[in-house]
Length: 534
Image (cartoon, rainbow, N blue to C red; front, side, top):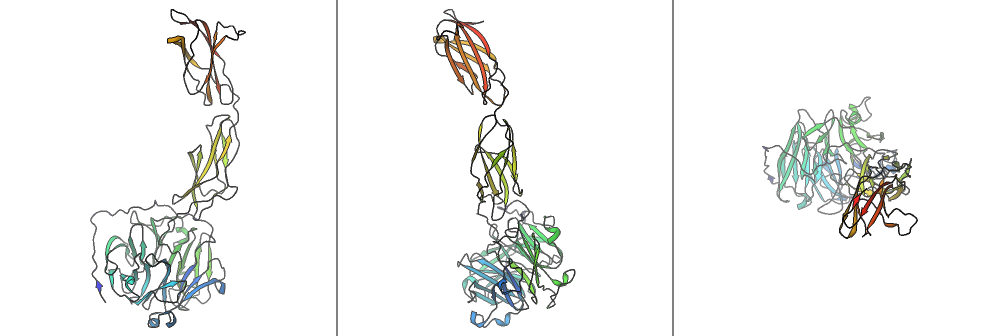
């Protein structure tokens, strides 16, 4: 056996992780039909079992979806003596090999990788000794193993062959956990006195391990480290007496997360959460109050506990050590956008000339909608919490008798978004006339054109000005209206060329509902000597 020298690098500067998400609690939902199966290490039957959490009776055959133990028929004839107290079960995608792979350890020394669901052959296996409690498949096909009695974390070169025994070692007293973090390329581990983040270097056939991050915690006695699916900045850390969340970005343990009041207990051996937010745990029956019924050893239980929603799954006569959510991903990478059920588009009521109330049926998402963005004419004007069962939004400062296009954009925590079908909604008509234009002035340009300037009224629904220029004021003469225009968005009007003479200029403001202001009138004399206002 070739033992690689371990390099310990003590960082002198404060370590700051990059590419992590903000600290946020897991979003809870009902247990979903798409929740993953549960893998358990059953030391009573000396098997790894895969059970369906949707089946309430775990004593029934319908609950068991897969089972495995080493034998000559599946390629483990020479390793059956290293099996009898299974500790770990974990499912992973094979980045290097393709397919899915079940990883298992046993207190008697066996560490193994088998194809899932076939389970009929050995990809890699070794009696590693040391009472292994955790195993993790790395992207290059190597495997990380944590051994509690041995007090080490090792990376074995499983990529090099089915019995490759070369390894790199990091000393971690009471090591119970190994978890790969793809975002930060760190192998997380924990043991008796702290949490450590390790960098894996070297090559696939000659790996190295370097301590990159450490949090010393006296008497932590960690038993499990798992991803908080839904928040890549956090890890579950089960200690002897509490269930923490480790915050990567601050290198701290947190007990203030929303689930702690129910999930933080004494004696947790395994923890994890479904994408729906449901948390599962195994707790040694001897640590429960009242004490449970498993008596095979001091760390076993016949029950898996579920929270949010709360339920239990019991298998009579079982002696579970760990229960593992069989999510094959290292951590959750959500690429699925929320979707809108039929009929979930936005509707409006309480419509006035300046406001309305919008309401819509909730969108659906594989994890949960984080928030809704209210979009008016392509612009986001507000945000609503995605947890609302009857989401709504009050829109104000609208213009009377005006059509607006509304959409609702659903967003999940990963930033995936989708919009409801657009709906055009018109406000009611305003019954109040706008104010009159003020500061009206007339000046003259070359070629007998008049420039009329004014200050538009400040009404919110102001639409424009109608200007009428009448020569000599004779309204019964068809030729009297020398110039007429309706303008919006401007504070001046330039007429066409006019004949010499006396003119009456009438300005009237109107709004979007068609209401007109009182007119503003003034006279102007256009002559060869230059015009003048009267």
